[in-house]
Image 1 (cartoon, rainbow, N blue to C red):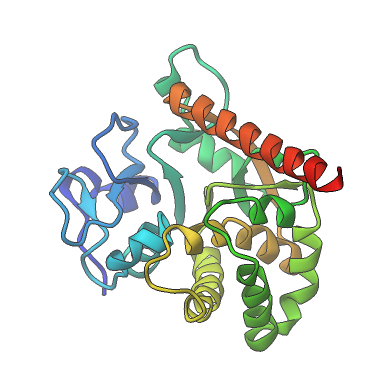
Image 2: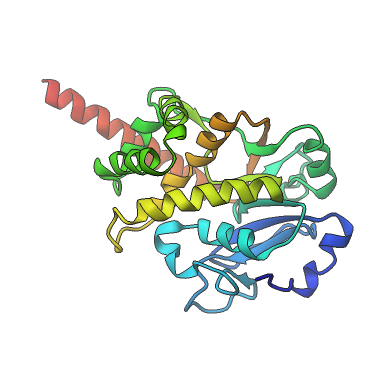
Length: 270
């Protein structure tokens, strides 16, 4: 089922045919380029923010507590008809080149078309965890339990065993493309989403309904696994953070978490 676009976006398919969903759960300043479509993720049962909600048409809006921004991605996959589709977050955007003003630095339609002329996917600059592999980093989250990766591997092995080698390669790296951010051709995205959501829906069977964020965080590794398996071409763009206080808080939290892990290891060794 195709959902009719809001007035602000009704001419996109005729002009550039690029739509970049901006996942948000709160009011925030949005890019003024018309390719950006704010999408209120987890809209089902929530107050109206004035943005398009992910609770219309074919949707999984009520799963947002666990699936995070993926409910917006699912909505875009199922309900939008365009040539290029992307997903970013309300405080994080792709940046082609810095132009002084942060909002003016956000990737625009001309830059998207230029970049995607010769490659398949735009990804955020890979994040380097230095001392941890992606698997070790994932296990470090407070809301992750040891069975999560065991069950994820079990699902991959059961429904798409040809992806096992790619998954092990990716999870053994110390760098990865985080935040579920990307831009790619819609026809390519259709293939990715068909695979990703099939895996995640099966994985969901192994987790309790009260666990938050876990599916969304697991998904952060899936695009790299899919790219590795299928040999797709990608380029990396810098990410501009519109709320540095939030980003600094997240980084401090990460450092303290890692220090805590190290301190516990030293204590156990002593």
